[in-house]
Image 1 (cartoon, rainbow, N blue to C red):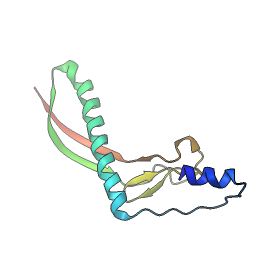
Image 2 (cartoon, rainbow, N blue to C red):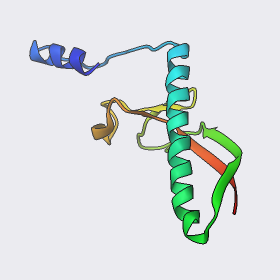
Image 3 (tube, rainbow, N blue to C red):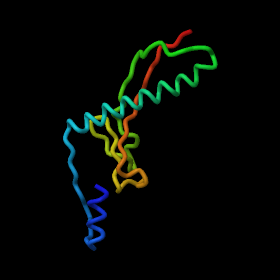
Image 4 (tube, rainbow, N blue to C red):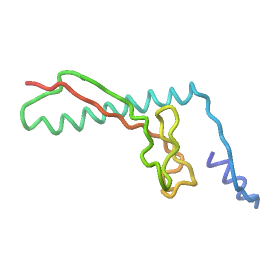
Length: 111
């Protein structure tokens, strides 16, 4: 997408609106990969919190992918099938091209 925009701008074209589509199966692939990464990050963060107490993660009780938009007002990513996709038109344009998921994880901990 960035290379398409750059080529259009370099040619002197005025780009007012651009539509790009991605298949549902590709979004689902991205969602699965990002969810796995988010779960690993959550486990690492949880382990850092409980480790001083001598506890360990024994299992995962529950994991949910949050599907509500981060902000309903004033910009933010486009939410589709549980994946947040940032565009160059967002107020936080520095994140343009990023995709993310938000998860809530509940772990079983013990000694």
